[in-house]
Length: 375
Image (tube, helix red, strand yellow):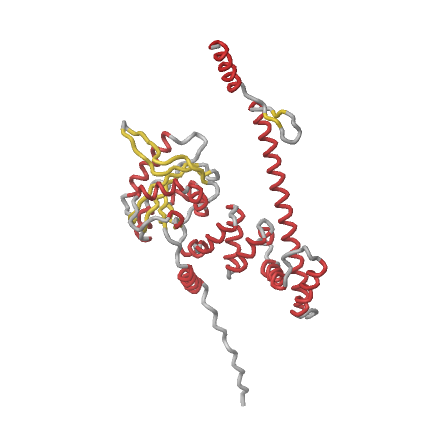
C-alpha cells in the first residue's frame, strides 16, 4: 500500500513539473507554450501597431471633416450668404437626418468655424492639429489666447504625446508663460556639446503630484520621485529613461552616491540629477562637476556623448546662477522644483509686461502741414 501511495505521489509531482499545453476555449485546440511565445508576441505587436495606425487614420479623417465643415460655414458667414440663424437650422437638419451622429450641435458647429478661422491661414500649424484628437484641439483653442502660445502647446503635445489630462495639467501649470519668462539656465558648455538642450530642459519642474509637506527632506523628495516615476518622466519629457537611484560611483577607493541617473535618447547622454531642498549655492556645482567627470570616465559608453548634470533646487537666485554658470567647465544646468502649481494669472500679467517691454515702440507719424501760398 505504501509503495502504491508513493508511486501516485511521484506521478503527481511529475505531472506538475511537465508543462501542459493550454486549450483554446473556442476551438478546443492546444496552444503551444513558451517555445513559441516570442513569435506570438511579434504578432501581438503587429496587431497593436495596426490598431494604432487605424486609430490615427480615423482621427485624421475626423479632424479633416471638422476642418471642412468649419471652412464651409466660415465662408458662408463671411459672404453674408448665411446668418447665424442658418447655423441653428443646419444643426437641427443634421440631427434629423443623421440621428446617430453626435457632435454637430450649434455650439459644436461654431467651434468648427473657429477652428478653421484660427488655423486656416497658418501653414506651419495646420499639419499639427491633425495629429491631435479633437478634445486636445478644443482644449488648446479654448485656453490659449496668443498664436505663439497655441503653436507652443500643439508642438509639445505632438512631440511628448501627452494625453488630454497631461495637456490640461501643463496648461494649468502655465508652461508657456514659464518657458518665455524663465528659459533654462545652462552652462555655455551644454549648448556647445548639445545645441538642442535648451529645448529639452526646463527652468522649473512641477512636482505637485508628490504631495510633499513643506518641511520635506531630500530623502522624501527622492523617494517620492522614484515612487511616482512615471509622472516624473512625463514632467521631464519623452526621451528620458530611468537608470537608477542612489547610483554608486567609486573613485579612489571611496563610494559616492548620485541621487538619480537618467539617459536621454535624443541627446545620447547620461543625465545626472542632484537634489537639493535648499536655495542654490555656488559650491553645489563643484560636487556636480565631480559626478560628471566620474560618469564620463567610468560609466559612459564609447558611442555616448558627454554627460549633463541637473541641480534641482527648491529655489534659486537667477543672478547667482548666471555668475556661477558663466565660467563653469562642466555641462550643467540649474533648475528649481515647485510642489504647488504656480499662479497662472500672475504669470500671464508678467508675460503681458514682458511683451510690452520687448515690443518695438510705435513710430510717430508726422502730420504733413499744408504749404502756405506765397502772397
